[in-house]
Length: 461
Image (cartoon, rainbow, N blue to C red; front, side, top):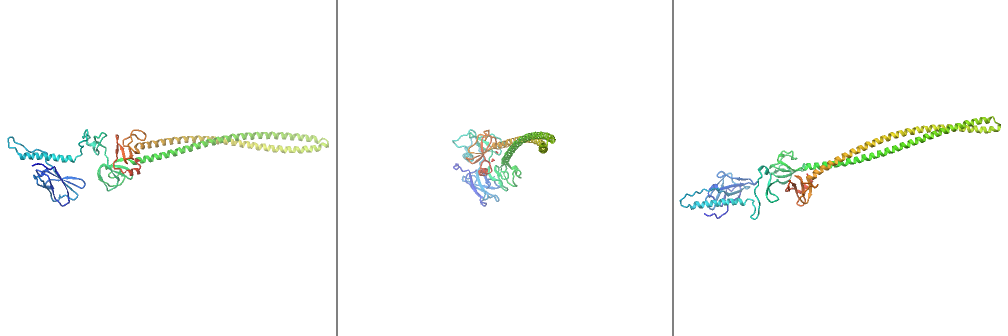
C-alpha cells in the first residue's frame, strides 16, 4: 500500500466516561502505538498495553481504536495523546534466488516512511534555527554540576551558552502558597529578596532565613544589610556632626576661658598698680603727719616764749596755742588716714595675689579645654571617615536609578559582581554578573521603588 497521510498523532480530551478513542493512521502491531495521559499540572504518563488499555485495528490502513480498561478511563482534566511508535529496526530478510517478495518489500518501504514521519513529527515540535538563519554551533560542553539551576541563553555573538538563572516574581512571601523552583519572593520582615531552589508549599513564618523551609530559598538581594548599612551611615554622620558641634563648642569655651584668663591677668595687674598707688599715698600721708607734728612742736615752743613777753604778746600766744591744738588734731587725723591707707594697700595686695592665682587656674582650664576640643575633633573626623566608607560601600553595591546600563560605578570605578541598578527606561531591576547586565525578570518595579532599591536597595548596593 502507499502512505498518503502524514498523520502520526491524535489528541483528545477526556470526560471521565469515554473509554474508546480512535487513531487514524496505520500500525503493524499493537505495540506500534504509544498512549500518553497528560494531567492538568502538565504531568505526562506513558500507559502500559493490556494493563491500562487494549488496541484494535492493527494492520488497517485507516487505523483503529484504543480502549481503556476499567479504572483507567481518562478524567475531564486529562488529555489523551495517541502517537505511532514503529520500532526503528529493519526486520525483512531477502533470500538469494527467491522470487521477489513484493508485499514484504512494500512493508519495508512503509516502515521506513513511518519512522521518517515519526522523526519529522518530533522535529516539528523542536526548537530549531530557521532555514535562512545561521549559528556557529548548537552544542554546549558545560557539565551537569555547572549547568544545574541555570538556563540556555545567547551570548553577545548570538551563540548558545548556559547562563545564570532567573525567576518569576511572586510578590510578598505568604504561608500555605505553592512555590516552584526559581520563583522570586520578597520577605516583608527584612525586605530581602529570595529565589526558590526547590518547589514546595510554604509553611511557618518570616523571616525566611530562620523559616522551616529556609534551605529551599537562596538569598538574591540582601536589602536588610543594605538598610542596616544606610542606617549606620546616617547614625555615624549624625554622630560626626554632633562631635563636630561639640568640638566647636569646646573650642569656643576654650577661647572664652583664655579671654577670661587674659581679663583676670589684666585685673591683677590693675590691682597691683592700685596697691602700689595706695602704698605711695600712705607714705605721703605719714610724711605729712610727721611734718604736722613738727609744726605743732614749734608752735608750742613759740607760745611758751611769747608767754614771758609783754602783755601785748599774750593775745598772740593764745592764738598760736589754738593753732597748735588744731595742728595736733590734724596730725592725729592724718595718722588715722595713713593707717587706713596702709590697710587698703594690704587688701589690694591680697586681691592682686588672688587674681594672679585665678588667672593661672583659668589658663590651666583653657589648656584642658583646648586638648578636649582637639580630641573631639579627631573623634569627629574618624566617625566621618567611617560614615563615608560605609556609604561608599553601599553606593558601589547599589547604583540607583539610571536610564541605561552603566559601564562604571558611581565613583567611576569598575563594576563589582552582584551590583544592582534600576533601569528607568525599561522599568527593570538589573544585576551585574561579572560580564554583562542581566534582568531580574517580572519584578514588581513599583514595589522596588517604594522599598528603596533606588537599593536599596534597593538596593546593596
